[in-house]
Image: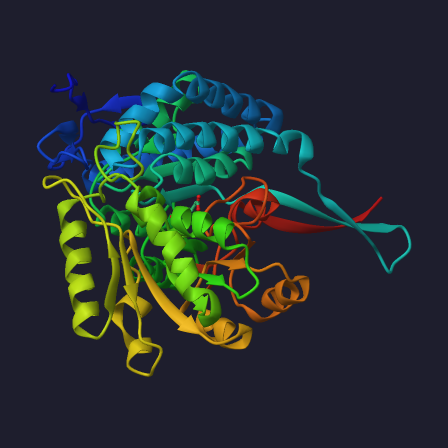
Length: 485
Ligand code: UN1
């Protein structure tokens, strides 16, 4: 049965008004069925990016002067709207991005939770007063908004990532120009609609839709005071360099090549379930996904038996079908490049441990487990080194904990790591030795709670961490006040 679906019109949100774009057409298609158009409309041209920044700049003084509790009230109303419409918006998400309906609805609820958390800053946010070495003086530190923030987001969490950047930007008194990945424009529209429903004043949040090159227009804006970006390392580094040249702070969350490490004493039942989730949920399209699996040789056969039995009943297909565990990847370009990457890895010596079944049509990539030879050549393998952003897991066997940690560290990236062990001393040593932003002990490598810092080490991150109390470090600057009566 063909599902009835109306194509949504894409517009820009400039100074509180939805307006048609002036640039070329953006067409958002269903990841599972690229012949299905989900949303379409012209994108923003550079003149409209200028307008967005002018609106954000004009709104910034008023917004910064608005009491935090009042700013919080808009976040709470937008949060309630997302909760109320979670099923509809989650269905749009699943259709446009391709993650399963359960994950899509879950992500909308997560966005609502994030808005709620940041609304709480109005009651939680506290300053610092220092003792002064001089009599009759106190030294206090006040936090102030940066001004106008550019927010540039990826396709893979089309509502949660924008929410976790826009919410702290707004609560700390900044105004925003938001540019989402052009592959998921509809979800960006849905999020902005939640803020429109909340009655956010004109100009405080502006939306421009368009290709990655709009990022360059954003970086050249005279009113830009800071940029938060999540996406590829190549683009992130370029934005950081431009920001540095202009003296504008940039926060960039970039690539990952995250390992799960299963040691000899691990609970293999639990570990095999968590590695399955970490590697294959959302088709492996999370910067926190597990793409390297390091197994102690003594448990490797038993573990792989458990993992492949789980994969044998892992269903890949239409993400809107509740029986499905994993949908497609985002587009055909990605599917083609991942498949080419797997072929390259095989030609370099990787062996195929498991390859799942996928529907013939659509942007599907089979869940794939590759064996990487543990030698100098193996450790250069494309599938060991490069981020595929797909359901492809590369397995390396090692002897003992030291070798496992060494293999885990053998990456330019350092976002997250999942360690499976029952030994506390090993956990403590992992915390000291592994250079990662997020360490999961006995749980999958993905996942991020709103109230704790999120971000990576090495090539995975640049600038202050996101989320939790850490978010304030990026979204504000401080004035140190030497205060005498
Ligand atoms: C998660 O692990 O649930 O782009 C969130 C990404 C990350 C977010 C991961 N910034 O995948």
